[in-house]
Structure formats: structure tokens, C-alpha cells
Image (cartoon, rainbow, N blue to C red; front, side, top):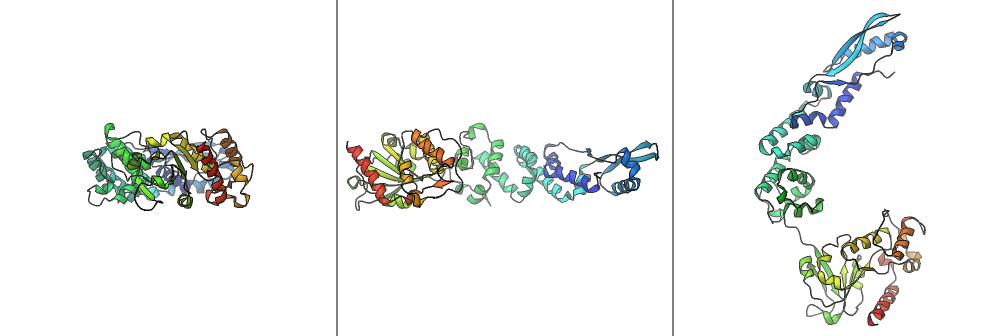
Length: 396
């Protein structure tokens, strides 16, 4: 028996609440009510075969509250004329809220909508679209509007988030709520106050004109004769990316490695530098125009992620070559193989033919499932031999 019960009716209204449809009308002025609910009742044959059950069903349905049951008369050849439920209606918003016990939450949302209408009407579409999220943020909502107000007055302020002078608002508050603030600011600010090319939470500061923490690049000069500072020849230096871009290091070969110990232990090489890699964040590194005149060698893990990072690097430095990311190196270290947790599966269009063949074997598990050779597991003698070959090629 699949006849609609009072519990089913409540579930239908609860579903409207869970979708945010009931509350959204308090923000945009549209209402769902009166609204007809879905009602499934007995068929003609069930009416005759289960008459007592039908009577109980009707009584239960009519005993319920906060909805209206519309009856209709049916005539049956055996039972004669009877009145059975034909429609069920929720007539008002208040009835819907009472049925699912959400009056208090609705009152709270109505308060948020009123505050927003008076202070920052541009945010009303966001409230209508995300009413349940707004309820979760109820305690923070006035501060979020404070931030929007501040940005409207101080468009593209060119200060750090820490310098926003709003009582109760601090850097962590903004960082925690960047996603919501981005949507609110996009609604509230004029187009010329938004950098449309800066997308994603990581670009929040750039998008709205804040100063961002500078990206720092760490490197070692591998040629003692080119040491940048007086004192020891082995110098571990960190610069912000703007200063790095202005560097006159007189090197013509740059290695990028993702492992710190490999970075620290990288042997000396004439007119060369090693950079401690930044994963997928190569855009700042590539702003150094002089790098485009150097031979660039990327040394990452031999796994799908290593090749994905190499592919990403080539969007900024197309001439970059891989270092020790070849089949010969992989097959020479079988005792050091480990498992890659979540391999990359997408195509990588910037790999060479040899790199592509190895990448395909790795992602398709042709050698061993989820195979990885981490760069720090490669024997140091193997590294020295590879550098000797580069040194010979360089001298030639």
C-alpha cells in the first residue's frame, strides 16, 4: 500500500525547505504558497477490497494539521457514494513552517533579509539563492556586510587584508569566508573594481585589489665563482619573486627540484643554479625574463603527478627539459618503487614523445599499478653521472 500519509506530506514540505525554496521567497518577494502537495490514494479496486483500511487512512489524513484536505465524492457500484481525499494544500507560509517546525529559523532568516535590504540590497539575490547557507552564517552576516560596505568605499585598496580597519573583522575572518565574500563582492562592486582575470579563492586578494603576500623563491648558486654574497661559497638564498626577476646571477643553466634535501645536496656545476620547486605555482618563477634565456631542467618524481607538474611548467617555460624522469632511471631503481596514492588520468599535451610514452605506461598501469619513483630515492651516483653527461654536453 503506497497511499500518502501525514508523514509523507511533511516530508514533501521538508524537501522544499532543504532545497531553500521556502525561505528564498522572504528575500526575493516570491512565495510558494498556496501549494498543492502530491497525494496518492486508493484505487477503485482498493476502495472495495480494503474499505476499512481506506477509512482509517482518511481519518489519519484528516486528523493532521497545517494542511487542507479537499474531498471529492466517488460512486462505487458496491459501496455507493463515498467522500475521499482528492487534494492536499499548504495554504500559507506559516502553515508550511508549522508543519516542519521551522518557524524560528524562518524568523531568523527574515531578520537577515531585512538587515540586508536596509544595508546592502545587492546581497539579496545571494540570500535568495543560498538561504540555508545564510542561516549557517547568521552570526557572521553583519560583519560580512561590513566587509562589503568597506570595499565599496575603498575600492581596490592596495593594502594587506590585515590592514582592514573594521571592528570585529580580522585576516582569518576574511580568509575563512572568502568564498561567500567573493560572491557578495561580485554583486556589490562595479566591474572596474574587480580583476575578472583573477579567479578562484587563491586569487581573492588580486581580484579585489588587496596586496598579497609575496611569493618567495629559494635558490642556490652552484658555481662558487658566481656567489652573490661575500663569505661562504654555498649560499641558500630566498627572494620575493619581484626581486628574483631582477636578479643578475650570470647563470645559463637552472635546475628545479621538488625535494628539499636534493636541493640542499645538489652538487656544484659551472654557471648553474638550483631552485627549490613550487609544485604547480610556476607563474611567479616565469616572470623572471632571464630564465627564458637559460637552459631549464625540471626534476620531479617519476609518477603521473611529476609529469603533470612538468606539463604545467611548460605553460610558463616551454623550453624546460625533464631531468632524471626517464624510463632508464625508473627501471634502474625497482627496489625503490612505491605506490602513488591518486594518479593523474588526464592528457598532458606538453610532454615530449618519450615522456608521453612513459606517462601513458604509468597512468594505464602497464608496468605496475600506481607506480611511483620518488626523486629522493634515486642513487646519488646515478645523479652524478647524469650531471656529468650534461657537463660534457655543455662543454661541447
